Image (cartoon, rainbow, N blue to C red; front, side, top):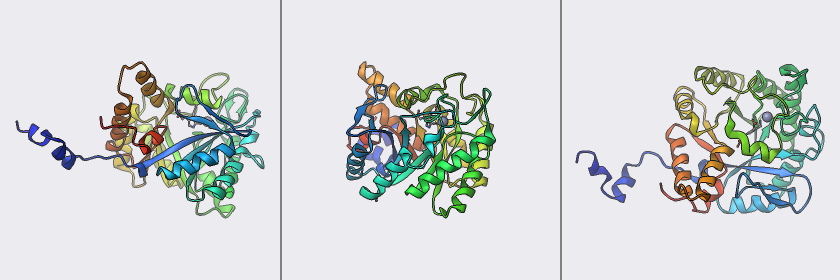
Amino acid sequence: MDYRRLRKNKAIRNYIKETRVHLEDLIYPLFIVEGENIKQEISAMPGNYHFSIDKLIEEAKELLEIGIQGVLLFGIPDHKDDMGTTAYCEGNIIERAIKALKKFVPELYIIADVCLCEYTSHGHCGVLCGSIVDNEKTLPLLAKAAVSYAKAGADCIAPSDMMDNRVEYIRKALYENDCQDIAIMSYSAKYSSAYYGPFRKAAHSAPQFGDRKSYQMDPANRKEALKEVEKDIAEGADIVIIKPGLPYLDILWQVSQSVHVPVCAYQVSGEYAMIKAAEQMQWIDGKKAAMESLTALKRAGADMIITYFAKDFAKGILTEY
Ligand code: PBG
Ligand code: ZN
C-alpha cells in the first residue's frame, strides 16, 4: 500500500494535488458578426454564439461578472475579397467591436486575433500570388490590421496567420504608431490541424482550394516548433501560443521547459466539439472530460489557456474528473 496512502481520501488527494486550473488562467473566444440584435448559437460549438456588437456588450458584461478576465476576438465580416480588405479597412468590424467593449466594459482584457482567412474570399490566411500565399505581400496587411485593433484599444494582438517574420513586422508597425504598450501573443507553433473544423464552419473561413500546409506546421514535427517559438520571441513576441492543445502536449511541455516567456495553450474548436458531441451521445461525462483536458494542459506547462469551456468553468458547471 505504498502509494495508495496518499490517495486514501479527498483531503489528502487535495493536499498533494500538483496542478489546479484557475478561472484567471482562462481566455474566452468570441465571434462577432455584422448587424443588430444577433445572438445565434454556432451549431458545431454548442454554447458558443455569433454576436452582433450590441449583444457582444451584454455578453462581455456577463463574462466579467462571472470572473472571466479576458477574451479573444474573431470577426466575421459581411464582405470578403481577395485582399481581405475588411480585416483592416477603416471602421472594420473588430475595430468597432473593440471601441464598444472599451467604452462599456473597460476592465475586460482584449486580445485581437490577427489573420486574413475570415476576410478573404479564397479563405487563405494571406494574399495570393497565383495559387501561392505570398508572404511579403501579406505582412503589410497584417500590420495594418494589428495597428487598427491596437489604436481601437486592444490590449494584445494575436497573429494567427503563420507567415514568416510577421511578429517583427507587426512589432515595428506598433512602435511606429505609438502602440508600444500593446502585447503580442503569437500563435508560434500552430499546426495544420483537422481540429479547426468547427471554427472554420463558424467563421466561414475554410480555404476554397488546397489547404494550409504551406504555412501551418506539419503535425509530425517537433523540432520545428522550438525553432518557430524561438524566432517569434527574438522578433518581439511577449507570449507564445501552442495550438491545438491536447494532441500537442509534448510540444507544450518541451516549449514551456525551454523558453522564458509565458506559454498559452489553445484548446481548439474540434477539441471542444468532440467533448460536447460525445457528451450528447452520453458516451462520456463531458463536464469531467473538459476539466481533465484543462488540467492536462496546465500540467504540461500552460500558463494560460484559450478555451470555449471558459464560461462553463466560470459558472462552476465543470466537475472534478
Ligand atoms: C485563423 C484561426 C483559426 C483558428 C484560430 N485562428 C483557424 C485556422 O487556422 O484555420 C482555429 C481556432 C479553433 O479551431 O478553435 N487563422
Ligand atoms: Zn487564418
